[in-house]
Length: 354
Picture 1 (cartoon, rainbow, N blue to C red):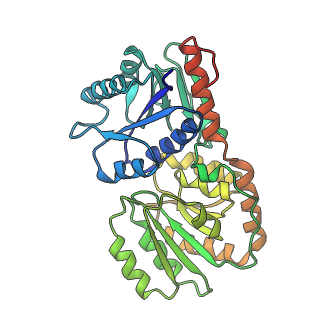
Picture 2 (picture 1 turned 90 degrees about the vertical axis):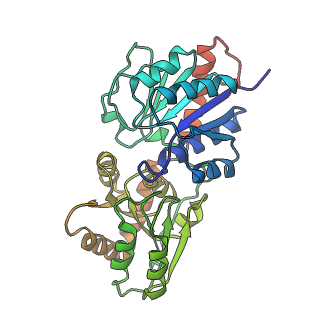
Picture 3 (picture 1 turned 135 degrees about the horizontal axis):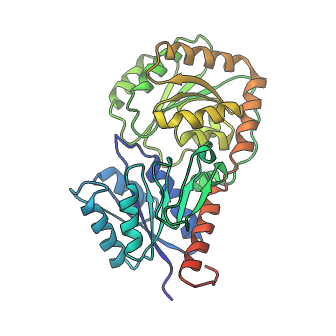
């Protein structure tokens, strides 16, 4: 019998970042390990297809069609049918209930990975692994939607599923600076610059996403910096960078979950409005030091001061490491994959093990 086939529909780019696509790649890895065939359909951007194929999955794009409109849903349905898929997984904040309804009406099992609760959901499964997900008012349109909510469903890369407990070093040797796939607020350069004012001895690692547009400026800064700055571009693997870092300065998106998983203490900036709630939960759990929103006056000085405090306080770094690893256990991708397979089996009247 042909394997179960699933189509992922997600976008990435300067405006939406990399988080939606990366989350889907991580979930596809978990599904694939359970024998499920996974394919991708994305917006038009060469970096996206290259990344999908490096992760070992086939992919295609919408071409010049606009995302999440009538032509998109028609093309998605046609692609899924042509590839023999019985399920479509959508990861976006823009698809809307009509989009999901049309997929379901076309006969597909539909799963929405959703960071918000903007409307009742007309699909079989909704996943939100964010720290604050249970605080949102999710509703089912027809009363038959299953919701998987909370950090136990945080979908992480395979390299982060199994991670040893972390012990804090007596001194900070490496500071990781990362602001997601695009860094639309252009924080990377400013943060590197202000951290360079700190007199203590450490190196900095700048992890730049594939849609970052100021790489040359970072290279120039690295050449004149008082501290050594290593520049990492569009990394497929983040584990080693995060494990080697004693402190990170990060935006408040999906990277939070990765840093917590490896036990890396983080100074965190809310770089988008939808990051505020989860940043607050991470701060309340003691995993991070929250310094405010990207557009707030005095942000860079607060970043510098927070990093200096952590440089000098080994016990605080150790406590943050422990709190992060207790909060995010790395099993979310496998839990979501198992739920998808089970729900599809029920929906298809097929109880066999995949």
